[in-house]
Image 1 (spheres, rainbow, N blue to C red):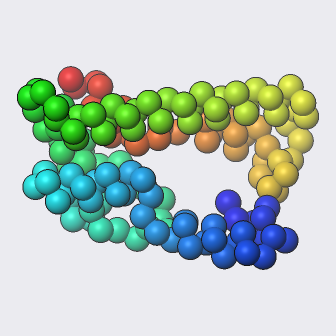
Image 2 (image 1 turned 45 degrees about the vertical axis):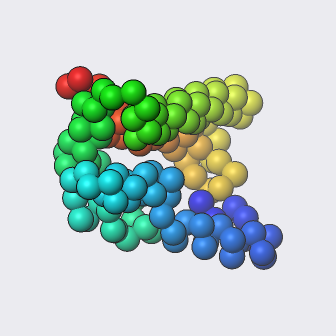
Length: 138
């Protein structure tokens, strides 16, 4: 993710700092944990530089959030706002994939990736995965 920006000195340092810290989803999971929801230890505090791995325990914590139907449940509102963001990211990824496919086909990507294959895989990955997988059981 940083390689395409390496010629822009200060940008690389800032991107590295951001990518080595907790993501928005990590912050949300830590909030659930502070609110006494059973987010597994290995997901509440993890290596922020490693790829996120979905967890049945995290899905269970979100299920408890959705099971609390009292008015003003701010964790429910957070989950729904995060799904709105996830949906927008997914739409953007798909639009980007189609635009690249139209403009340059399957040539190598600007970041050195294998172009369309990488974009297609990326577009298919769920943002905030447990919020989506939870829909299968609600």
